[in-house]
Length: 209
Image (cartoon, rainbow, N blue to C red):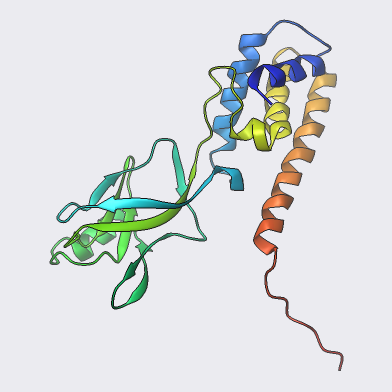
């Protein structure tokens, strides 16, 4: 579903209005920003097994464009020839700086997130290609495109933006309609996240005593 189709759906929920096109577009962008902050993030925003490169003597790298957060499940890791899998530990910058800043360069064991960068500790002694998975914000709906939200969870974004617009135009019936749409769509998204995490996990069989 592209942006114009989503706008038309919101107009229909407002009683088949034909105006407010730009206002609805801005509301969709606003609600997308809110959906991507402080909430459980959907699987379709996850960038899996990406390469994070550092050169010898340089412990800082810029965060990717529209970076949201590191995947809790995968973190940041690399394969060492002797030690095998090395999983980096996340540390607050001040704490890591106090612990590692005076150490000699060596293999990375920890990382810190800053505003626009990621720092590994200690300073790398050689070039390293680390692997990580992270969440990236969906494409901005500044033009008529189908972004990640409209491709995978359109009713979440339509419902959220619809609530905002219906509230602004004092349409109580439309507020109820879009609130119900959003609640059902978001719950379905949470259920899907839980189902994907639980799928094919080992089951413990109970015993009858």
